[in-house]
Length: 369
Image (cartoon, rainbow, N blue to C red; front, top):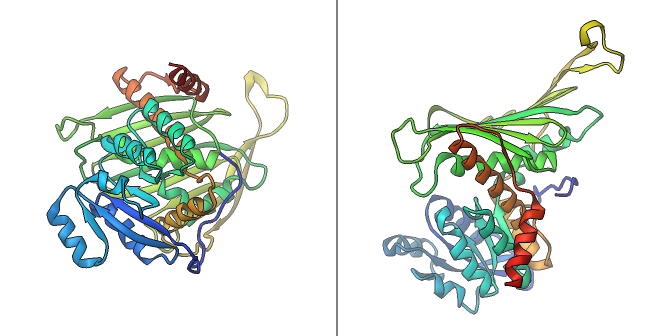
């Protein structure tokens, strides 16, 4: 990932001569947000909507007349007027649906997680490249103005990051296709990777089935990033305290992002402790410098992160650019989650995250065969 901070909180884009023609597959709660946004954007034209439920399509059709409706993904893949497709189906279907669309030459924005295996994610990346198609993953928080402001503070000054942690909890909604870790943690893994411009080297995780369901509904994930930076993520479908919080502790400040605080979404505590560059005292003890400063609440321009993400997708399609949350970033999140799975199976054992060169070698070998 580039360390350059990009802001997606842009004003409305004037209509272009040839707006991108969009289809949306999957009209659940989140899918309908995409339908609404692409119907509003001036540089897009909503062409088709696909959902397996006929009754849902009838409801959508009444709200968005003039849009083609279908229950068959093949109709979207072969639609001559569709340039790009948003995939909002269940996570376990992402690979097959996205592969079919990319094979048909469509640009694709797929909801997180990109796939449920790293090998599948790598195959989609290679397929998109072979078709010169844009493959983007819906890591929505990367397009959140608050998270972008946090990154500014993370990169500011000479202080270094010690650790960071996140909490994403609520009473459901309980998914049928993936567990709580695969449902919720992709957000925070993507945020951590974005803030640190790196991917974890190892993972240690435990999960619980407190609801006596067949899937883990609570999880605790520790992540080891380069530079001895530790990350920690707590996710749960069974916690009555709804939380959407990310905290970064640096040597010179503490930065807090609270997505549920509409007034002070980001707070910066200019307090920290660092080791003085001197010889240790007796018995290996060091001298420390404690900094105590102001508490800052920076102004965050109110924007809709999902709309910022959709605009970025349209721009990448129009200009042939690689998205900030491309298939590569999506694959990086998936390989961390695969390591999470292995760690849970080993009762919290520290598991190494497979490196990128491993998957590059695998892709080359697959091509040779």
